Length: 391
Ligand SMILES: Cc1cc2nc3c(=O)[nH]c(=O)nc-3n(C[C@H](O)[C@H](O)[C@H](O)COP(=O)(O)OP(=O)(O)OC[C@H]3O[C@@H](n4cnc5c(N)ncnc54)[C@H](O)[C@@H]3O)c2cc1C
Image (cartoon, rainbow, N blue to C red; front, side, top):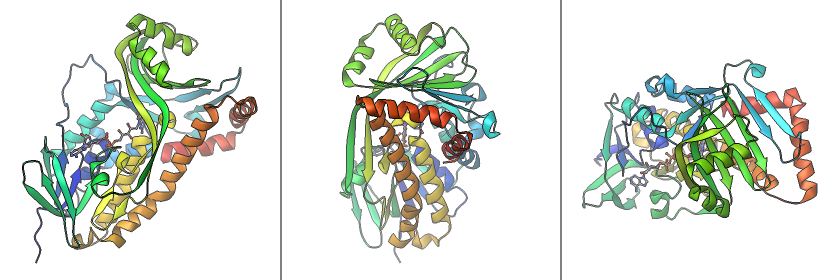
């Protein structure tokens, strides 16, 4: 009988890979989590990560179930009480409030490293997960009864199933030549944190502007995190401004709604692209998180989609005999269950990006009328809120 080093090996211990390992903790599966870089778990508490996420209520439920949410420090979390969206014509707007939907918050804003820390602390309590850090895989071979990883030091690890949780440029996906298409938005997400003169009251704000999309997300201590999706030229300009000039330009772009700003965490930029992957599951392999899909960050849904993958894949794997976890037919159930939600989110985000990144005057008036009309239709608004919160 074939012996394995583990039932499954997860390549990539980012937010999604670590969450999947945790989601398998109540199974009999023996898991190896392999991460190239050891994550940072400690930092001075007066510093703030400029990578932040809007975590949906569905993701929060998952993080709670897998034991990560209770490890998050409440003083680093900000509930979003309302969301204000402005178009690129005067008075075009769309507003959502948590109370309208009978909930306490629409989502939570959380720093990347705080979430990563909570997940990795929770992993300490998982007796069925072995974590290997600072390890590089150099080859992957798939056979009918096993997947075998060769590490850079020549060591080999075999398992019934390999999970690619290794981000947008997935090494696992490339090793297996799984077809994918990447559409560059020719935009960058420029992120930075600011202290604000006026309180934000937990309100997230977003402006669809002729030259990009600006979002202000509330952070604790009267601070906010900016995500400015903009052209390469604008990115170059923002990254080279002095701290004072950056704060001034960002305040101006947001009509000084939070008064004067001052930089807390300097700007960094990430290229934005839409990635669509032909099959996220094959015999002995499955992809999760950004390895399986990327979306424009305008709706703040990327990692939430990844947590959706985790919930579904963990459910499928827990429902079959451990010997069958690598079967193509089993993994196909995971793929089918995720297809619709992922495609819907990619289509909506891509459509909005295309609609607002367009100078055609007819489209401009249509998109602004659309925003304001949606604002006046409470039923449609409630459906949109429910979908965003619970997907
Ligand atoms: C500007 C911007 C703003 C965003 N805002 C939001 C938001 O508000 N809400 C939201 O839901 N999403 C948001 N996203 C999307 C979110 O950042 C991603 O969806 C999420 O980080 C993906 O997590 P992941 O674990 O799949 O991949 P990654 O975070 O890329 O993690 C992959 C991990 O795999 C490891 N790795 C890679 N290759 C190997 C290898 N060969 N061997 C071992 N380890 C390996 C890496 O070291 C890394 O730790 C935003 C994205 C951008 C660019």
